[in-house]
Length: 74
Image (cartoon, rainbow, N blue to C red; front, side, top):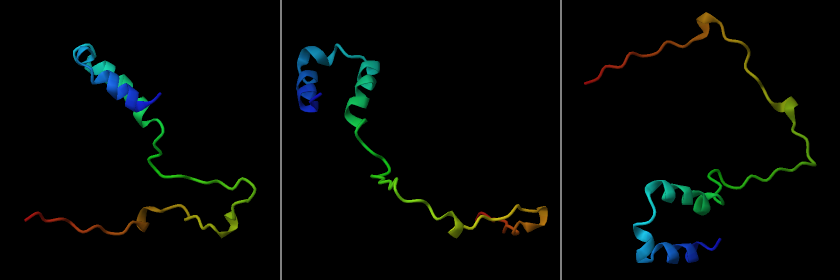
């Protein structure tokens, strides 16, 4: 749908009072469904991941935690 055409129609006086807030929320996906919030992700499906190069931390024990400094609010 052409968003400019939709804006022209919704800008007409007879439509201003006709739509309730729920109707306007229903129009939101028309304007934002094409947006990629995290950018473009290109996947190379012909290449394998080198999982041997990845290091995974071992399980944590109770004494492994670093001491935290107490905050004093001034």
